[in-house]
Image (cartoon, rainbow, N blue to C red):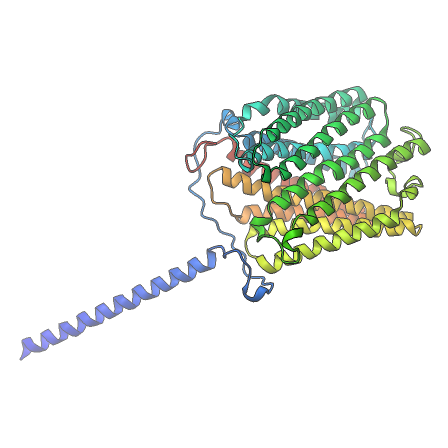
Amino acid sequence: MVSQRRAMSQTRLARHSLFSSAVFVRIVDTLRAKSASSTRPCRPGGSPGGRLRFSRMPMTVSIPAPDRSRWRVALLLAAPHRLGFFAAALMMVMLAAWWAAIMAADTLGVPLPWVVVRPAAHAWAMTMGFMPLFFAGFVFTAVPKWLSLRPVPARRLRMPIASMLIGWPCALIGFHRSAALAAFGVGMVALGWSVVGVRFGALVRAGRVHDRLLHPRLIAAACGFGALLSWGAVAAIAMEQAALLRALALAALWGFIAPVFVVATDRLMPYLGGEPPVVPARWHEAPLWLVLTLLVAETMRELVDGALTIRLGGPAGGVASVGVDPLSGGAAVVIGPALFGIAEAAVALLLLALLLQWLRRQGVRQPLTTMLLISFGWLGTALALRAVAHVCQALGVAAVAAGLETAALHALALGYFGGMVFAMATRIAAGQAGWRIAGDVIAWRLWLLAQIAAWARVAGALWPGGAMVLLPFAALAWLLATGGWALRHGRWFGRPRADGRPG
């Protein structure tokens, strides 16, 4: 009888143990599933019903263990993006530090010598300083894949990029000390970029996939125009034509840098959820051509306005010598600011409508997609600010128009260009490094810091009373953002891929 009770007790104990183990395993599996669902990036396609949802953004990314291998200069020549992006990161930090030092000198009341007029030097350096280097790394990495061509060896970019890296320090020193040194430095940059443009044009001509040639050809045309403007800048500095140099910088902003970004953004549409439903299939290229047409018109306007400013205001002693924006002068009135304002407002509404359609499809979920979409929104914002500036100019409110114009330029340069560079370069750098293409906490915070710099600079233009605080703050935030990006990604470019593949 006793043995029978012991057997029954052991049987119940065994059943209880099995039940407890099953419950424990069930709880652990449930917790793992919840943890995975909270950190796994959501599927593209947006929320149910097309509603705009602001769900928790995944800040984690499955990245392999850090590569402890030694950083080597030779690996910069393993792929074009390594060399181009590394050089661009160096230039980005150098220019950010240069301008932050100038803002600090202004705050402390320390006068700095300027041989080349400050607004013109600032405009040209910030427009043509690091963006072309990013372009070189991007186009020679992405376009061969678009056109089904063989990869381009990075060694073909070694000499032109070296020429550009040698030229910019000479140019920055020359802006303060010697016009001849500045012209020499800008000439070295123009030479390097001309070689890049010629080689990229040859690459596009070698493409045989005709249905994929539109975007590469548009980028090649913009790069060629940028080379012409660079040689024009050399002549402007040599002839001490500050107004012409500033006009060329603005023309490069609208006619070279902006078209490349717009075409690249259009190319990325499939990755952002496909063609927006607001655009019919047969008109899917209409927004691209409308925006490019407006950019060409803006470019011509800046060139004509610069020529008229020189003619009416004299060479270096005219409008540009005192730092007045071109829109505040009387020369720009004959260009038809009201018509430009209407066109800019229409394109701005179109771009914002496209942005809303993308947001409805994608939602604000994945960090890199969010960076791209918000940065794209700055393009419409810049055109809207510029439209209001032209309306104010047509009404004769020149001071307000000048502030709005400055705000529009920095919304375009820092907001759109800067934000897209942080997002796109991070995406390419992570993918080409053999890591999963997704944003993590560091990438998100660096991009956010760059956005804070853009907001501060735009606010400083719209609120002159706070410019003494907002402008140095914007320069410092931009320096921290660019320095952090260069420090983090610069280590990737000199190390082997995490997945062991070449490139």
